[in-house]
Image (cartoon, rainbow, N blue to C red; front, side):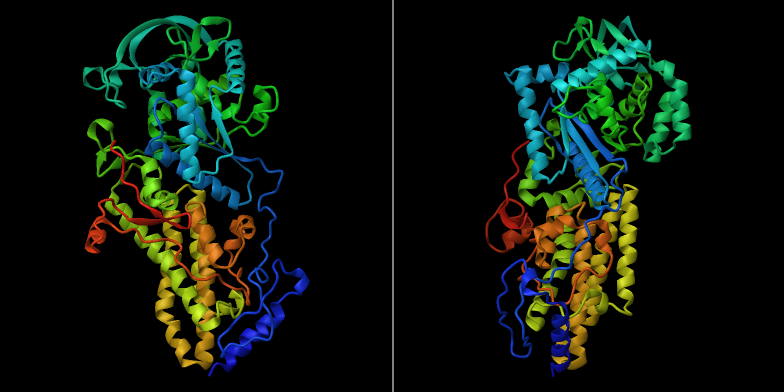
Length: 608
């Protein structure tokens, strides 16, 4: 009954099994069921396909420089900060898959009145407070699998040197002058506000707190001088600000008339002193925005503005929340023009997050703490939900019920279950060994073309920063894989034997090749899950790390490759009702969840 498939497997192995001298691991005999006998030894390290490590992009191409905002350290990181950084990390990982040299910059903004006030409220000093909060960002980024290349702190000595040099260039260009200024000031925004943009009772529309009346002697930047240049820049480069509706906002601000803005503070000690005037410190935005450039400076060399610029500027993409769009799309370009430096290529302003349809706030008791989410559900689940469920650029909402439903349906069921049941069938009927190359298995099969079309679609969405749509395209690959399995029913074909069993074995190769492709295509979003998929397919960590987007092309799996022991790659999250139904009496949502390949006890969310 099994004669034809036996011969097929044996012939494949005789062609693909390499000399013993080339094996990475010592081979040992496999113990196989009687109907599948082989006359040779195999090793799980012997039959991996070899990936090309040549970059897709030429080595002399300019780097892809990506930045998050430099997060203000008045308080620990919140979910809004985490969301921006998760999105930036997905973009950075995708660009690396394309073979590009990526410089992913993140960091913390650590000067200003608000920082000094926060430190005092905690009974701490500004330096100690900044050290503590900055470290909390680094810890969270590690827990979220954030692969940043540069972490800049605006209290770094190299940053201060570059800010002072930049300030001097702008001063020499005649764009800084001293004057008295009075107006309504938002301490939280660190910005004077125009009365026409305020809410009732002179409340800031962002922080919903009353602005205070201030008058002081400051240094000003001649922003109004650059109104025409900014208008021309946006007209000639409509992709400079994205999404398009954010561009409309920026154009509206500029056309309504730009006013010079204060770039120093007389009453704030915690900041970088103005060159040649120790009585004033540089305004936090004129300081912080330079972090994108100072991050490029090598720690081992004397800080120098032009050296830093030559190391990667201009940035390919500034990723920011919409609340700081004006600073990045109006103030920052004008500052760079004044200093004679190139403008960033693109500024992308994303939306806000809400919880259960409501704006989050400590006063409402509905804050969403990223540390709690990661501890409870794992990094892959958190990353996937926010990138899949929030259309990048628009506002998005979180609810725990939807989070659990989406993650279970997509990662545990569509992706995880497809791999697990396929590997189970392969172990039962083929001793976990692929009978043919995936390219041979899919000959004349339209399924392969369908998968490749979806991969192309995912790539286009990643390139366009349509991260939710990219997730949808990859998930659809899993959906068509599940449909193929259900239609082909290889479990039944194996029972029929002969040519039917041979066809079933090829079907399993096709599905496992599909899983390999999903692992690469989903890697920007769920890097840990992708590695677990690759490990199940019998690959080493080095082979996984060497994979590029080019390897989403069909044909990576080779006949004779030995799969790992099947085990779930993503544990299903149990909601509260399910746990109680099982009589376990657990109050916290999700008694156990899968994170980084291990079952992890869920933690109750701390009161916010």
